[in-house]
Length: 500
Image (cartoon, rainbow, N blue to C red; front, side):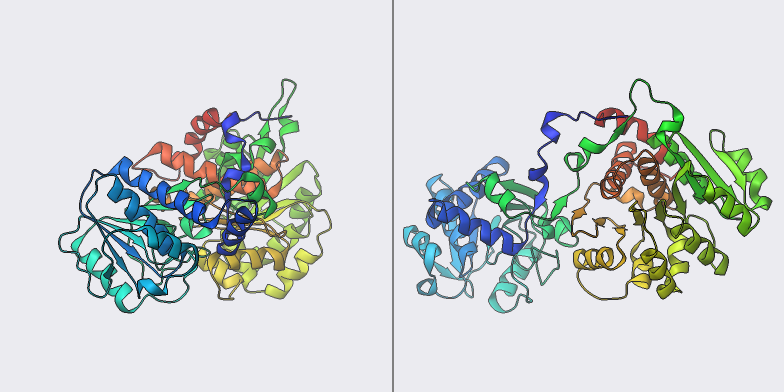
């Protein structure tokens, strides 16, 4: 099996890196230490915002709202450059102009126009607002004059251009501390997790990541652990059969189906086949055998009536990737079977009912995980409710998923419109290509099957989970409106053709 050769433009993994607020500050510091002055960096940031504005709007009455820090300094640059380009610009500052310090003070001194107080500024005659009040690190609710003027802007429906993040959106978490929705957000060098996580992503509107002179070497030296999901992260290890490949070399995935619910496991099986697994079997209670066998053609169906039958299946080392959960049913049988499967030391995915069953026995779950010695991936794919039952600690989404991966030694896929995938070594990926049409019954079962098909072919667990989530979103996006879960496996070949 040969690794896929991706398109050259997809291979720059560093472009997908997401920087925390602290990392971005350190990138600024290192860039300034390398010889680019702070005022020059601020000038480049303001110029990038102006370029983005002029590409989207014609000259019109514009109000630039400036805060007391570096974000406000960017605002002074923006106002000056827009005015020089012939735009009618007003500028209002939060607090007093005399209180501005550092690089922001340098650019405030270059502004030759009037400076209004935000407390006194009105928006009646304004048709565009630039929000340069606060940057990505604000972690307290907006209040006072800043909150009041943004509320007035929102009430009039005036388009907003946000500098770095909309004021009130935290760059690390995407939490909303009183922000209003922007039409455009321009950030610099790299995006932050809060630009991709919800609700921050929605509040940002269109996101532009502009270069301002911070080098790739500087970014790489920060060793960012969080990335935006995309093919560059996993293309080099994506499985592609070579000329001499045969079905046995492409892995044999085994799914444990339930009864009387059968559709979930069947969806997962079709997805695993479409993703490239050489063989797929579904183990089912004998009373469901006829239904499964009648509905599945290329999938083998194997009756499992007892613990001995289960042990026999697991003893066959050709079954190299296991999935339990979709349609498995709730109760002690699913719990015991799931624990047995965990201890089988295979690449394993736990989904749906298996996760709910494990939440009833957390100590036994962790003991079974600790007993694994194979080094093969175990992947949990919960939605938010299942995740909270397993991991009740409260924190922001990215932190919660990272902590869960660390505590279990498993790869965690917390599903949603902003799915987060985390590995025990601290790496995390945020996905943003999932359309709302995926909010339909059975789509999660298909996702589990896609990931299963990838790990059956030997793809590393974290990369397989990340690729599976991206493929799932791309298949749904390519299909369009009217999507149901049954459509997803058959939409995968088109996505794979485009990828490969």
